[in-house]
Structure formats: C-alpha cells, structure tokens
Image (tube, rainbow, N blue to C red; front, side, top):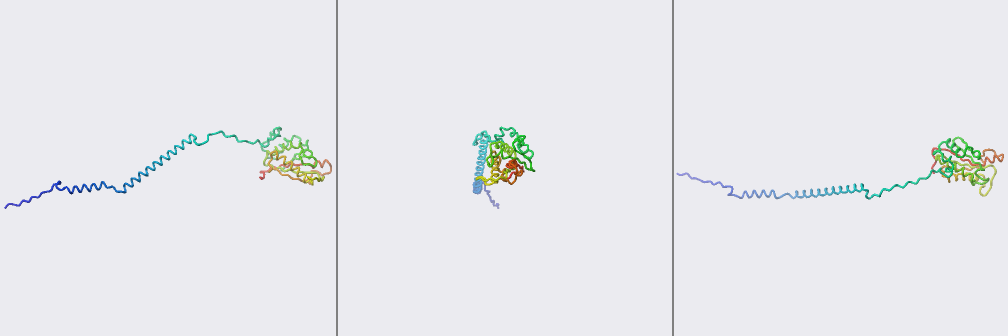
Length: 265
C-alpha cells in the first residue's frame, strides 16, 4: 500500500498583493493629511513676526530722524545774541549827585543812625548851622530842621528855589536806606492866620510838610517811606515871646527812623 502524499503550497509574497497595497495607502494617509489647526498657528506666528519687525524699523527710523534734527538744529530758530537787559541808573544818581561829589561818594546802604548822621552832615556841608539848618539825634531818631526863611515865604507853603538843592541832597541820602521811615512835621508860630487857603495854622503847617514830602518823592523816594503831620503852633521850640523866637518856631522837621522793614502799600 502506497502512502498518500499531500502537497502544501506556501504562497509567495507576490501571490497576494492586496495587504501590501493596503499598507501603503494607510501610510500615505498618515503623511498627507496635516491638521487644520497647525496651519492656523503658523499663519498667526508669521503675521505677528512681520508686525513686530515693522514696529522696530519704525522706531529706529524715528530715533534716527530725531537725533539728526537735534544735531543739525533743524526746526529750531538760529541762535542770536541776547539783547542786553536795560538797567535803570541808581535812584540816587540825580542831578545833584552828578554835580556834587559828596553825594556820589555816599555808601550803598546807610542802615545805621550814625551812618545816616554822617552822610547828611557830609552832603549838607560841614556847617549846616550857617544856613539855619540843624541836625540832631533824639533817641532812635535823627531830626533835620529847616527854618522858614530857607524853605518858605511867610504865610505861604510853596517851596522857595533855595530849598530845592537841599532837598535834592536829602533825597539822595534817603535813597541809600530803603529801610528808613521819613516823617515830616510842619510847625508855625502862635500868630493866627486866616486866608482862603489856610483857615488856621494847622492847614498851613500840614501843607508845608506835604510840599516837602512831594519834593522828596519827585526825586525817587518811595511814598511808602514818607508821612506828613501838621502841628500848627502847638509844639513850639521856644515860647513865642519875641520875633526871634517866633522865627525859630516856624519850621519844618524831617524825622528819620531806621526800621528793620518798611511797611508795604
């Protein structure tokens, strides 16, 4: 009895192409189908990068233009020589100061009573008594007295021409001390006066003091430093017993008082 022989045939790889074809198709499907979100992210990143680059270029150009303008002076007016600031001459440089070296040599600040007394004595001359002018100290005050015959006509308040040069010198001294108060007192004798302008000696004495104050102010003295008083016949230097005594009582006194600070307007 012959044995039965059974033949088994092993298929070759080429005999069944279908599995290989399916494998290639699945491989292509994995490489050719990118996700939609990946493309969106790439586009957004490229747009932001371009925007940042443009901003950097813009600011670099802006900085360069600004630096160039500052260097060359573009847009700025050309430099010109500044006009000199006008300066006023010192207030004490008046006509009397130019003509009288004693005034021109006054110190810049006469801020002490002894300095003020020395300055007034110098500008008024070594012997002011020769003109009837007296200068004395009473406590903190310095008092300069003008007799009527130098400054006024009898019964009048208009200043005589002979008084103007004296007041010019007095004003020059006052201007060296802005901390000084100047009080001007008018005085008369006891003989009554009744005129349309001056019903009593009060009006006459006050007007005389006012005219002296106006003369000083015209020469640059600050009005805030000046005040006037009229006492009439009520504060005589001596009893009105003789014509000589009456002549002494008819006077104007300028009281100088140096303070720490002059009151403002």
